[in-house]
Length: 207
Image 1 (cartoon, one colour):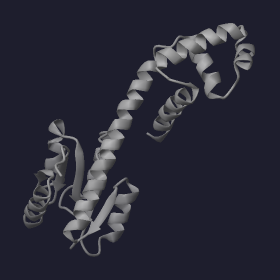
Image 2 (cartoon, one colour):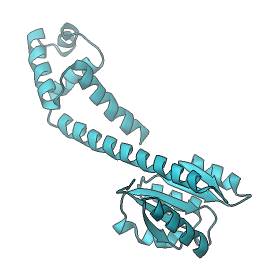
Image 3 (cartoon, helix red, strand yellow):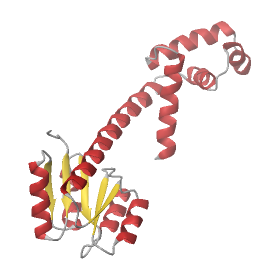
Image 4 (cartoon, one colour):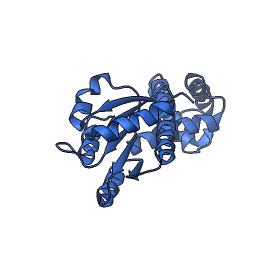
């Protein structure tokens, strides 16, 4: 299976880097290699979507510090951390910092390949969710202030009469605004409209 996304491999050990790059390329992954975390950070302007596989213990910038810098730069590619014997505590710290997996050396080929597949699938899913959230946000911005108020009532589960009472307008006017909201949001029904708003709010609160 060919993946369009790129595996960004960061390791200061030439032997490990070359062997792993060969394994991943043979398994159908596009691979880009970096001899240090600094080299990876310098390449960020040309960074392609995918995932990052990094050693945790490297001279200069460690894998853990690399994670911190990626977070500071709001780069959300999934990170897999490789750890040598005795570095498990560091790897656990990396997981707490957001790594999707840590793999202890030496590891079976399939262990790494499986972990990368999971990471790339997660990245594709997250990217799709980001696109959907951006589209929802753009639709919300087309609503008038009154339509937004009606939308809030609908998401709260209030009936039209209650929304009308709360906003001091007629139930008929609420119906008109509700129809406009449904059209502008391109929602087929009320449950879909509520799902859109809740998705957007869950993404904002989780970011």
